[in-house]
Image (cartoon, rainbow, N blue to C red; front, side):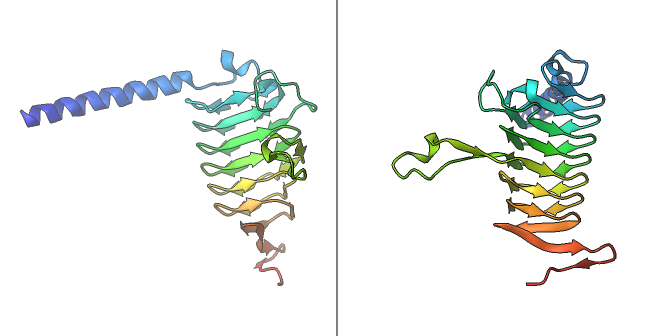
Length: 212
């Protein structure tokens, strides 16, 4: 009896997994799907995997060609549907990018992600922070501050990294997992830590460590 139950469970499990894969494939958003129409640009060969995270302000989001947005990714311009934005586009994701599962890209003014940028899972990128100068007012309701973010082409952002407002990451950079990034960083650098700093940089010949 136990053996029969085990076999039935195995068969049902395989069936559920097969159906789930087909559903996820069918529900994913490609450039020719109805779900791609609201976006400012949705490049050929790109896909947003199902299930998606929260998606707001597609009108101000541009996705290049052959880019993959993994499942459970939050991709938004603004914080609520139909919010009017000051810039157009607000979020730009270049060609041949890979945005890892569970990541969030939340733009309010400008987030510019270059071509061939890969992220690990659960990366958070935003260009807005709450104000905190008024000591009589809760921080959560103070006027926010926007500061554009740039991630250079060819860069890799490790899992769990947080890219904060004003971050300017050069081309071909590595951001270590769980780093908190703010400020300007040159191209060809390895960036790590909380707060993040350059730990290695390529001078065109060799990798070197910055002087301390």
